[in-house]
Every structure is written in C-alpha cells, then in structure tokens.
Length: 261
Length: 324
Image (cartoon, rainbow over all chains, first blue to last red):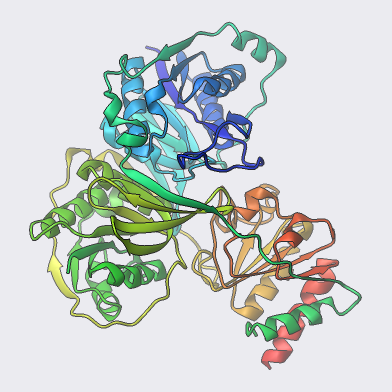
C-alpha cells in the first residue's frame, strides 16, 4: 500500500527583507517578497528521501495562506513532491497557531495520510509548536525536532537533539514528524523538476470544504491578540578601533570599564 | 491572590536557572505553584520554596522518561485541573526550551487557551497579562495577550533576575492518570549531553562566539580560552557549525539557540540576519573581525577591526593578568 506523506509548509516574508507589521498588527505580506520558509525545505527534502526508500509513496504538500502562497507549493513541487493542497480563504487573515493547526488538521485528514512532516519552526513566527499541536489535534504520535529520520514497516524512528540529552525516538504510523536544519541539505529544483511542477495538480480548498466556521479562525477567532509592535531602537553607534597591536588590550580596558573584568 | 502554575525544568532534582527566573515573574502576577515531574521531583522543592513557590506539586512515573512530551502534558493538565478547582489560575508559565514550548502548546489546545511563546517580559494589564516578545530577528518588540482561556506563556531564559523569596513550598503529590496517547512516542535511548564544564549557553551571563573567521575546529581553542578566562559559555555561528568546527548544540542564531547575555563577544562573525536573530537582545555586544565592513560592527558597543588570532589571545592574557 502506498505511503501517504503530507508535508506542511508555510509561505513567509523573506527574512533578509525589511519585515514589518501591517496596520492591523498582522505580518505585512505586501512589501516584502514571500517564499517557501527555508526551514520547510528540510521537511520537503526528508519527505523525498523517505519516498525514495519506500516501495510506493505519494507526497502531498499542504499550505494555508493567501493566493501568493502558491509560490511555496510550486517550489516544493519542483523539488519533487507529487501534488499540492492550498487552503485559501479571506476569513483566514490573521489566524494564529491554534487556528492554523485546526485548518491543517482538517486538511490533512481530508487528504489522507500515514505521515505528516513539518519543518522545526517557521522563519517568521518562529514558535516551533505547530507540529506538536497538530499531533495533539490529530491524536497521533508526535515525533518532533529530528535531526535524523527513518521510516519503514509502519514505524518512524529518529534522533532528537534536546537541550540536555540526545534521544532516539520511535513511534507507529500514522504520526506527525518535524525535522531540523541538521537533517540534511535540501536539494535544488532541477530544470526538469521546475517544468514538471507546472503540470502537477494543486487542489484549492476553502473553509467550507473543511467544515470550519469563519469564527473559529482569522484575527477575530485568534486566542491571542497583539496589542502593539514597535521597531526596536537602533543600537547607538559604538566605538570601533583598528588593531595596531594593542587591540586586545584596548578591548580589555573597555570590558573593565563596563565591569565585566 | 490567584495561583500561577510554573512548570519546573530540572535535571534529576537540580532546578535549572530559567525556572527560578519564572518564579520571579510568577510572583508579580500571583502565588507561584510549581509543577515538578519525573525522577528527583521532590528534591526540587527546597530550591523552589527558596525562590517563592507556595506549593510544589510533584509526580514521578517511568512514563515521564520513557515517552516523549505527552505524559508531561497529561501531568501539567492534571495540575491545572487540580488548581482550577479553587478558581482559575492567573497563568501557566513554562520555560522556553524546545520541549517546554511543545508541552505548553499541547496543554493550551487541550484547555482551550491561547499561547504566547518566547516572552521576554510579563506585566499585568487592564485586560489581563501582557507579554513582551522580540520578533523578526529582534527588529521589533511586540506586546501581546492571550484573549481566550488561561494565558499559557513560555518565557525565554535571562528574561528576569533570580530572586530569593522564601515561601512555604509545601510538597503535594499530584495524581496523574496517563491518557491513551501518552505512550505514543517511545524514547528508546537517551544519551545525556557531555558537560563542557562551562555555563549553559542560554543561561550564561557572558557568551563568547566564533564564526567563519575562526577557520577550523582546532582554532576554536582560541575562543574557548577567552570564554574560560571570563567564565563564559561558548557559542558558534551557523557557518562554523555547518563547517563541522563546533557542535550544533552551541549554535547561536535563528535555527540554533537564542541568547540574551549581559555580554556577547563575537569573533570572526560577520553578523548575518541568521546570527543576529539569536543574539541581538544581548545587553553589551563586542566584536572582533578582519573586515571593517562586516554588518556586526553596526550593532556593537565596542569593535576591533583586526585579526582575531592576534586580538583574542591578547585579550585573554590581559583578562587573566587583570584578574590576577
């Protein structure tokens, strides 16, 4: 039987751009170019490697986001995913992690899955909790923050590098996995892959298709509220000296003046 | 005064510093009730009482070590429900480690509460608890609150001072019945991280980091010597970690650790956004770099343009001689 892999990805504003907030204190998506979150490329890569090892597998890449989020799906398809699902609905604007996890859970169930793979965090929200919440909502094992992952015989195994220990984990499928940036470099799409991606199916779903009420998501349905966002004041210009043989001693003098020595 | 649940991060009974910082924040909001799980849970009580815990709820069972995350969520939920019997707690506070955030988030969805992660400050507001966060690689500071349910908030290390505030710290056994899902993900092996003898990176008052400019794994000894002269933790940029010169557990930046020490010394680090995201909130920033145009110099309090292999050893020697 075919191994059904769903990779959840996020379309984010480019972290090297001048990111800021819109008037409603949601992330401004208009003035900065968007792209597939770099950390989700690792999830797509691991999905491709797992699919290559399996006798028969199908990779669906799933995102929740505005029209432009199709770019993130297209990138994942060009890397080699088989098909895509795009959940798009005007009522989703401003949805927080609880709403997003609800939408993803419904979409994953509708798509059908044996294995869900996520990145370790998004590069904009950076919470890193969505995979755990998704596992909670789906009621399946959470096998997260993996730097190595193997799937075979209906079991997922992986290595989790924690703060105080490295753990070897094991769970039965279906399960939700997240992988870190230590899991292996993501491949670049080939020209052939880019051409093939244009013909791969992208299914569009809205809230009604997922039987989710508008009040459950969006800015109004969020369980958290951002009250203010202020640009961090630029650090005042420091002292820069050129080392003429005494740089280390000058630096020591500065540290002593600040009472660090 | 309403109770505030504080999830305790400890290693075999030794309470980690971020938990003591949480107690400082919890005392601003209400009466801290600590939740301490696993082997050594009861041994945490003395330190928790010393720092303000009115009560310490403890539970130990093999499940906490043998299975990932969910048994701890079950226990924290049991603690939440036991406290709620006497009135809704003011908040649930959890240290912002990778595991802490996962535990907090799963609890939040179960109890129908919003969650805020990686707060750097907490204060009471007219409409409830207000959490400060540093976002977009620390380019913005936001203030947010949980608008549904009991606020579940994870707090970054170094966000509050550790304060002695002796309280009763009465130990109570917490009764936990594990959910069917608790045993879903088995921890088949666990290898404790080898101690470097240096402070924990995220908790350290001083962090000394090396980057691409260090050039090799062997050369990191220059960075380590400086760190040891200051009693500091050692960090590394992603470039240095990707090159295999230093372990990923020491990586500072967006995909590594986020640090906020009193002093951050960057050597041979250009200061790309990926790195800035993890250290920009440091109080004092110092850099040594050959390239006068490196972006790191835009954010330093003091910078030396020069060869780190000249400057850093000289600095180390000078520190040693000043410390006598």
